[in-house]
Amino acid sequence: MKILVTGGLGFIGSHTVVELQNEGFEVVVIDNLSNSSIDVLDGIQKITGKKPFFENLDLKNKVSVQDFFDKHTDVTHVIHFAASKAVGESVGNPLLYYENNINTLVYLLQELEKKTEANFIFSSSCTVYGQADDMPITEKASVKPAFSPYGNTKQIGEEIVWDVSAVSGINAVLLRYFNPIGAHPSAEIGELPLGVPQNLVPFITQTAIGLRQELSVFGDDYPTPDGTAVRDYIHVVDLAKAHVLALKRLIEKKNKDKVEVFNIGTGKGSSVLEVIKAFEKVSEQKLAYKIVGRRDGDVTEVYANTDKANQVLGWKAQLTLEDALGSAWKWEKKIRNNI
Ligand code: UD1
Image: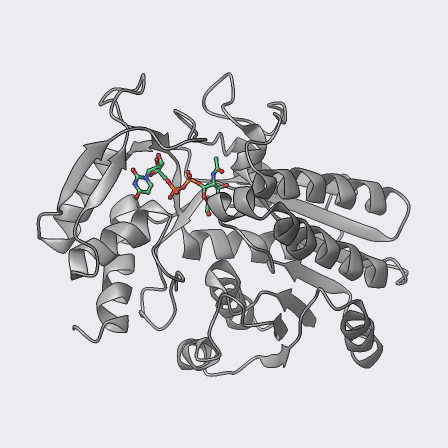
């Protein structure tokens, strides 16, 4: 069975391609290499023994999207990762985000709505909840006004999927990721941030390897046990597996509604200082860090209630924070040729 994975050479996309191929699915990857490398195909091949079919295609080009579907008439299952994800960049360049994340979604769905039946998995984010009133966050928590154009594209993206699904043969799953981190345990694929990392874990590993002088911890005056902000860090391999289960649910027509929403996290919150301590333990070295002021737009505490994914999808995070940090560290050492 053929599965289209857009953004399949990116961080979460590549790990999902691996899990799909391990389960025997035939994968077609579309990626425009704007935030990924063609070498990721080799990493996928090393892990799974198979290179997915690859098309270097920009989903912002509507005609290219049409041509792709004209050529691959049998593609009706799509996992859509291709999108931009840097919160700060989206504030400075909102139209880039609306074009990259919304236009592309519209063009893809325009092709899928021509099919009698199609299955669509959308990469959403816990950012849609903002600072939720109650922890842990269930899927019933309200969607709060977005803090950034990036967050807004995830909210609008969800709404687009709801609206289109209601009037077409498209069944969909919206996966709301918490904070994806880590790398494949083989260290053949992992995260490849462009420039200075904005996210915590790549900044930690780059500091530990000597690329950055020290980590800035953004704020220690939050109302949390140690004063630093709390997130739900989910291993990318566990996250990738959730996509395979969601896809199977749609293919086997087990879904109860045309659009279903699942939180994908561990259910456990960790503070920035806890992440640093866990990293120091797995890497057996001290990390240079200093406490600075809060970062604009950051919320205090976000962690998932994952009961719905556990009970309905049959999915549960298996790997620990230490597993994730250990794999991220192994990957950092590998890409800096420092093993
Ligand atoms: C953000 C987005 C999320 C998006 C993710 C990936 C929001 C609310 N969240 O998550 O939707 O999917 O990025 O791009 O928009 N930190 C430091 N020092 C650093 C970096 C981070 O202390 O150098 C802290 C942050 O203040 C935060 C935690 O580490 O408390 C995690 O930050 P980060 O990895 O950037 O993820 P989020 O902001 O939670």
